[in-house]
Image (cartoon, rainbow, N blue to C red):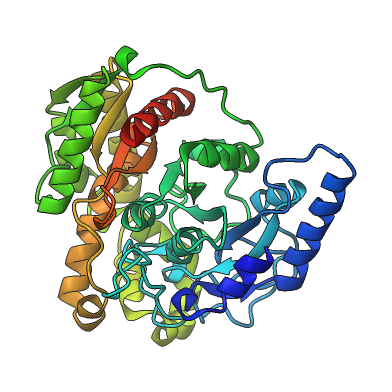
Length: 423
């Protein structure tokens, strides 16, 4: 913990934290050390550094969610249940991590608190991915063993993919979202990223209060689907190469890989009619702040929130009905498979400066980053992003995904894939 706090002050960790808890974290670490010396069996997270995204409530503090608009608002009365569960393990919470304002972007840029630099490239400043940008960089730099974040359209899996980490988006209903600043109550998921599948499962068990009963299985017993619609469009050569190499290794390990059309993926853009659940529900959350202080918002975030204002209730209700019908269709089509495989995102982390300079470049990149992972949120499913790049290459994520409630079986798939890729 002391080393992590020292490293957090170094230049490479600039903009990772919006607040640190050095004294409290060291106290937690010392308490864990004392209990260990006394022979007390503790939780595996006890005394280890963990970070929390800036949208989680901490008792006595105003939750800013990457914004300056919330300054002066009442402090949280208590910790979010998820934060309380992490504290109960004895983990050392070292700080709040930076994020896209109100979690509304997959890029990770924040004009108020700066943008954490992706550690994968020491020469070129590249985006970390968002919205859980600081969470990813805190883990990638070794400042934490786990970074708590959220995932509405890929906000755990995108930065995990771009920074070379493991991210797990559990089925939404597994983890309480009380005490988290909302973006979209239909799609928001509380989850985390770490350096391994086992660590993600450990943290998920804490956040959910109900650890998954995972039964390990060999890849030779698994049937994995590779959708051909949408998710492979416009994939950059580096990503295509890493994805193809990963599939070759999985096939060699005995997995049955089956290409399927899954044409329903092309229907999401029409059914989640512009502006989509996130904009509509974010406007409901932030309409008073928008009326009071829109000029203080990140302009790109404000523009997306404003799209939700004119949507009538009839359209919003119809969107929910269409989604339910779509989920049923997709669940039936993929029922015979253990997981879906696809690139987490179709590109490696792009340089930051061009996205700061151009709205056109920013929104094009944001759309590409969100495209694949957001399909699983729309499905109300679960998914892992696993690193699949070779040493010396920029990080590439392999996403394995399944339907809602299938977290335990998917975890077995992720463990087997991770082992095969590491062999």
